[in-house]
Image 1 (cartoon, rainbow, N blue to C red):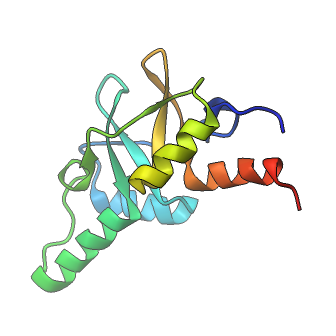
Image 2: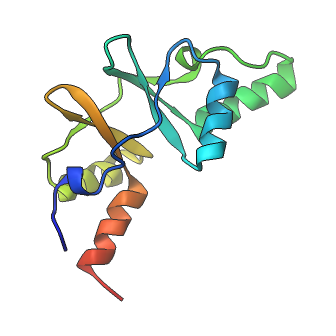
Image 3: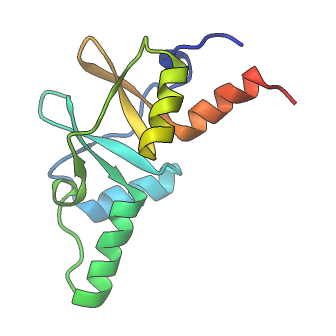
Length: 132
């Protein structure tokens, strides 16, 4: 195993959106990239929310039932995301996933977004702890 730090298992350059991004554009981007969610950044590059597949599914249902598709990512994101530090223990990240059931956490270093750690990243690390 190479490390037990978040920075060694995170996605180093995650896809990100701005609040004003059209939610349908965000949904198509998530589909194309095969990811379940992404951070939403303010004008200074700080995470202010997360947009997930679940959020996009809710938009699709609203469009189906009410004929009102879309809106912006800011209208549908989960605001004020919990973050984790790049130097924090991967075990702390695992505990966060168990406790909160979120898809992923923005990873910060010196207050700046440097990555995203997901449940799958933690599982990949566990594969190194417990090889086949």
